[in-house]
Length: 287
Image (cartoon, rainbow, N blue to C red; front, side):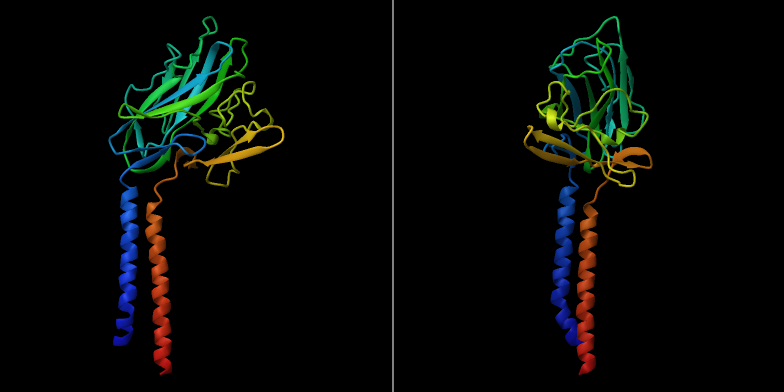
């Protein structure tokens, strides 16, 4: 027995070292909140608890004035909280704003008699969040309706977003994430077609492969959006897996998975130790 214990001591030391390494990496990840911003998945903002995040959506390349819009944005209240009175619709005066819904904010505006011109340097809306918790999440949007002065949905536009942290702009002019969970939700359905590349059917360079927002089957928990780049002869598809998923019918983030690493490491180490103990017991029994 003493011999077994002596042989197991190096194994136990390695096990403790591995668990410590996993705990250190988990603590490092827990120091900040990672916020996914763009469709490509390449643009991520890192912030600390208490930081103020400003998220702005812009539209350019329009060919007509707008007479009506309904647009929503999404976040996860577990990680972010809306700063009071920070939701502003810069392009639409006297719009109706609702930011009281859980994980969602929406604005409505209609004025057929006084169409508004969309300026590329003026945001459709901007909103500020306070970071409440570390982990990983995303910000996204969905347009239900936006009508031009011909009373049909806009067909030429480019949607971009910018993000600042504590007043310092960190990301600008990137294609924002469209929340694909809204596609099959009657509360958000309308006449507007949300394309992954954030561009209209008339001005997109991807006319042969212009991907609309779509969801996975209802039984699957995650949402994947894809956008294709190319011409008539070839295409190169990029995919972004949303952190945001449907939870009990509500929009929210997938949560913090950093503790899974520790759990998996612990299970593997226990299995290895069990095997070693069994091997030594069998050998001792034979002797």
